[in-house]
Length: 213
Image 1 (cartoon, rainbow, N blue to C red):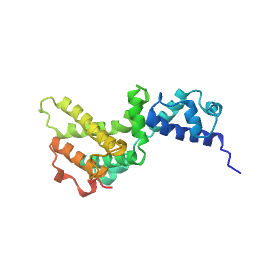
Image 2: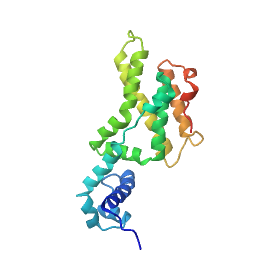
Image 3: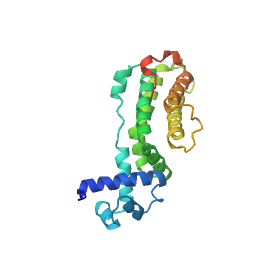
Image 4: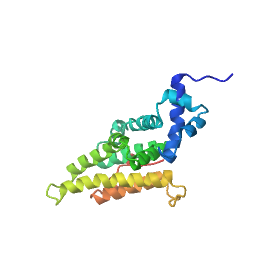
């Protein structure tokens, strides 16, 4: 006798199936019938849990966007030095995406479709990076550096783009042109290059800060 799913279990099974479909095809590339077939239910059953495809899509986005990254343990374990903490935070982030690439796919799809949830993705996943970089550079850069504020803001954006591009290359590309370089090695090199660009030599990275996997 097959186990009959409870209401919450059925809802979660629909979310799980929709997650993969929306991640690969976006909102407009997936039909309600396709989602229903993926969980072996009728569209009528699906509509009992979600009023519309848009409501289901929003629920999937909310599920991901509300998963905040916690970097408290990272700071404790890696130390409070800017370079060490940044390397540790990067490790936490890439581990999370490597384990579930759908998070990155959903983020990119929502960005292309102009969904408001994109802001929540930034607030919960990237803002910790950019805030920390801005704080660190504010402490590191001399106050007489020309265009100091622009440099600080641009540096946060640059690092965010570097990490995202590395994740796209290693987690989403069907043909990895950097196949001989692991995601962890690539991320470590990017962190080192970034630190060097702001005047922090890679030899200053402590052993605990080394990204590995």
